Image (cartoon, rainbow, N blue to C red; front, side, top):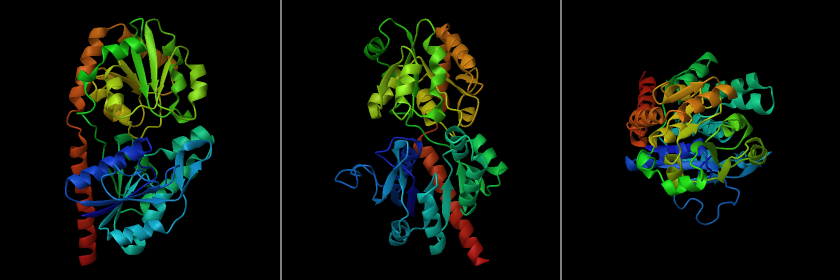
Length: 377
């Protein structure tokens, strides 16, 4: 199967869309398929080595930094997208979080008569509420118009699927995300690292992710004030400076990746996620694979991931007191932390990227079969 993955983000970017697109390409190659990735150019331009570790060829489209958030690149209109789809002789086009580049991919696929699968990954309506305090209806109109043109839309969580259907998006099915259970595992817990992060033996509460307004990381301020608790923040983004002021005593490690990130995850005692707009929330799965109990908002992706009272706690979104109290209950009960962590690891052991990648290939096959049946009719 020849697949073109048109993605709004791709490594070296570090975010959920980029990571999922990379894992998808890797799995397709592993299964003997022929993917091609189309993605925005990086800040440094094409340059040698930018895509040296990619599992397949990558076509880069000119891009500009998003105003106010230069870590995010937005693709410019380009004929390269349709040209790449045609040149690859694609059987199917995979649109990862289509918004700008994905719209070009959708149009190119339609002109060439190639089926398209759109993967919903970004809560644009939530971002509109956060950054412009308006525009939620317009964001949903955009989402609906883009996804309605696809042969199939794949939602990462039950909450996302319900949102899409409620806003009139047709042909939606569930496709969750995988987790690397080999890289992220409990036995990487590092006592020396823990002593450096919490020299007084505090319980470590970790957050991993982008430092941006929509993540509402400032909700950890009350957790920072708990006796015997040390908050550790991993990631970077435009909110770094205000968060350093808002979270007294927290340790900021910046962006960490790969095996180093896995070691940090396993060295947490509790993982706390604060963002209420997560369509999935990959870092929750990575914490669970690391054997760490999770406290997360009862909204979006975490509703599917966290078994309340068994692998962690779900708390009302944007409620700092509820977040603090859930963390404190775990701080006071090491036995519960251990049992929650073991249950979390057990819950995700079957959620490998290979397993969900095979599900994706099944979705592709169903779309191609449907197209053939429609043509035959």
